[in-house]
Length: 326
Image 1 (cartoon, rainbow, N blue to C red):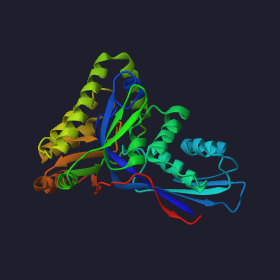
Image 2 (cartoon, one colour; image 1 turned 45 degrees about the vertical axis):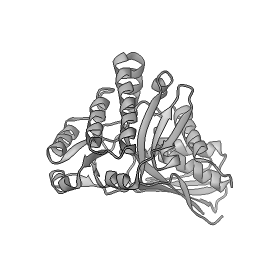
Image 3 (cartoon, rainbow, N blue to C red; image 1 turned 90 degrees about the horizontal axis):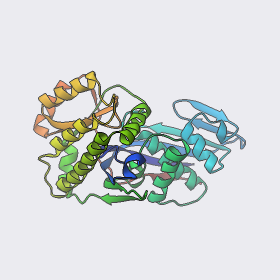
Image 4 (cartoon, rainbow, N blue to C red; image 1 turned 180 degrees about the vertical axis):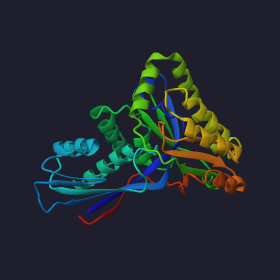
């Protein structure tokens, strides 16, 4: 048996600039960090060597990878010509909640199958393959940030060049500043899961058609650069405001990024100690992230008592093999 563990991510700024429609003409940039919420994948030879058994929220028992309903698994297992295996998927957080779970699954499965075939693979190659699976093969309307975040791990400034090249730069942040940042961030689950595809399709369309949306994304890229500078200069005083400004901009690049309920919770948080925050992912549901000084956190938690808080910490590792007996 082989088991991989791949982290989910929290994106602070720049989301949307990692879509090809934008970065092919304007350089994109995202600031993000991986957290200690993971997707675990295990692979084991199947007793029936002619069958694939895939267990996630449902169980699939098929003769060939092409028969799988799960799009990502079907694409990856077909690519590696895998058969006669049993694969199980367990995640700390539900899918479609804005933490990059589909890309973490793609990264983790590429890692798992490569290890099963006794091939080593670098974080960069993992990210490239996951992007190829999701964007090229499955035509998902997503960007590249989640695959690189999950593959490399840590707090990173990720840039997307018009040439298609992606650079991953670890943010040079002092341990005390990193600890304070982590302690001042709170994550709340809205209880809503959603497919981001409709929002992302509209976002892609807007990038192509609207100069105003392109200008907004350029501003969001500038904010990602500024946020990186703030972290590296140990100045967290305005971090919450930067999150807030980024969230305000994000809502203008596509419809249905937010809704009345999310807006109400967000305003309630600002009135009860949070200096800023954002809805994670493309929008529509999932997790709200807030920046709040520790002295105000009890007040904030009380105000948002209807939402489920999910404690978390930052991680430094990307996708890993945590067990292998083959």
